[in-house]
Length: 103
Image (cartoon, rainbow, N blue to C red):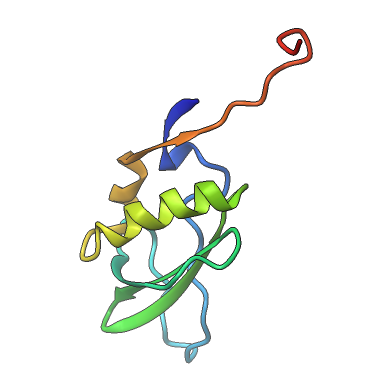
């Protein structure tokens, strides 16, 4: 097992999604405030962030369901925080053995 911060996970933080009018501005991870989280769906962590009184959806595709569950736990415990701050939280991941380490 290896402990890594979320910011080192491929694809973290995810980009915001959703459709708004042409005057809307999509937030950076330093501007988005985590507002809500939904149950893990397979390896997907789905949550919303608020920026300029609008909610934007986010979908993080984790490498495994186990990692998705850990990311979900971090996000759910940090509602109201800036998305970029979550990159400093650590989770445990399994490290693949190299060919010379296998038995």
